[in-house]
Length: 197
Image (cartoon, rainbow, N blue to C red):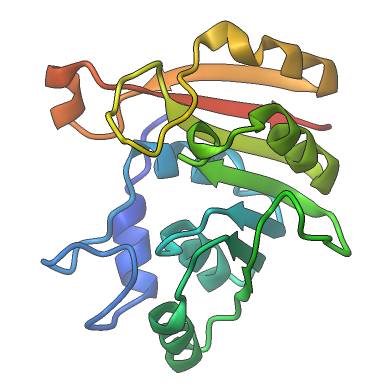
């Protein structure tokens, strides 16, 4: 992947406001190694769909660079994010809805979901829909096995659960520590990138 980029510095330089979704209580941008990995890999894309956007930190960064960004989340109150984007003149399309049932009218260069598929009952259908909407890349991050406890997790993945994706394009699977403290606990995430080219 090359040298590790400091996206928090870039993010802070682009977005300077007292409240920003994705920032911690000290005003520091929260872009962990998952974000750094996929933001580096997908920097050549122009249009993005983020599934399970939560606080929108990745989408904010991508939109601040002038990209076409759409976010979808099933249970979401994006008022603070919308207000911030309006004040900052950052354009993001927001959809409150279920990704699996929502009918999109276009494809995106990159479709990504960070820490989502472990919550989805039919994760195979979820990945197939991501692939169908992507023209260049599909990016997924998810905990390795039971690395992170969350009562909402319904899936616990092994690396070979994702090998079948190689039939859809070039596949790369890595294991990442998302932050320094995870090295002590051994908690890791899979970083999965499927190149559709």
